[in-house]
Length: 162
Image (tube, rainbow, N blue to C red; front, side, top):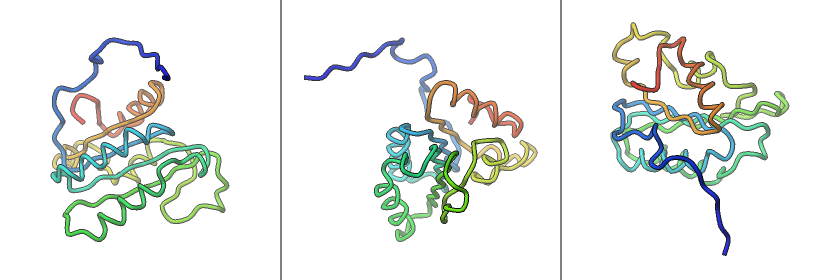
């Protein structure tokens, strides 16, 4: 049999005891982090209390994206069902040729403006209702997660409340 080495405290210090409120679920996923993100999407859809789920899936190249078939099936299922939840998927490629982009694909890197546009975020907490309804999950390396939270700071989002 194969073995896997694991380290770190268990349970992780940052593990949440409860799910934060918010009807808008915004997921930023880097590379193979899709394995966790796709299960979160399925769980949110099954739970049924989110009004909107948006998955931003970032990779270097198009061929680096996993679970394309499963993601398109989820998208088709949510579009054809009577559910009130909207699921939207955006692929982001940092090294793909800009001229080869198709619908649902973006070229570039994750930055504050891209997050604001993809997730249709209010520009400040002054829009209380819409700002409070945002929930975030960021899946990737520790540095990618930290960097993405820093990109959300100018829009007044933080880990504790969102």
